[in-house]
Image (cartoon, rainbow, N blue to C red; front, side, top):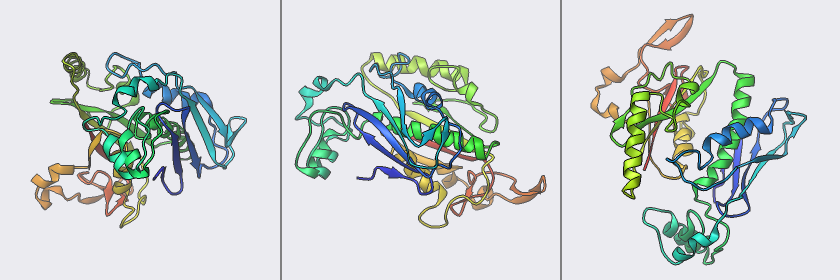
Length: 318
């Protein structure tokens, strides 16, 4: 089972949604980077369930604990282990579906692959199918709760970037919910704009429509999907590899491994299919003493390698 992502900065997550806890081990973090549990907790609080009526109402405090790799507020350069205990695990909630497969969930495929499954939480059935045995206590490895480890690792990565590359900036936000599309200037949007409402959409007018739509659909006992956009600014050229480890390929793998994601596009994405090459090409020019591109249909990546322009991509969630 692939639990690790990355090369120089390697992230390995562990745990299940209704087990003892969730966590992450980070390898490759440089030493002497200032980091504290409060830095990590701040990011975990942003993803914590039960924050609003639009999210799952599972009550988890998600308090993090740094187990290793940090001393007196600074990284040691050794493996960093971070754990979050589950406080609201409710295995009894899943008894009725212990022998059933939920539609469009990872239940069946998990069991088909592993022959064993933990049916309390996400991804139950496919685990049983692969391993021929199941653990019905604990919680699914395929649950979105696994992303706690990713968020904790992201908090550490954020501190590394702010230390080594102070000008870099990464902002993600809700771009679309169903047929409601926000108008957002990706070149100027800030985190503070994203945090102004519970749907985390910087377009206040669109956010109100999104919230109203989500509430209406929820009251009907249904759900709707949307699109998240992310932009990374002041990223140096030269990141990524030209073949299998293209930068956009790594980004796509990271995003599409998140539960409920169904699509990924970078730069012009699928819109490129409706453009001619002469329209899509990004001409080079000298600007501020640096080689830049006049347009950015490539989304900051050409030939699998960053070109110094803003990197932006979108992720579709069901």
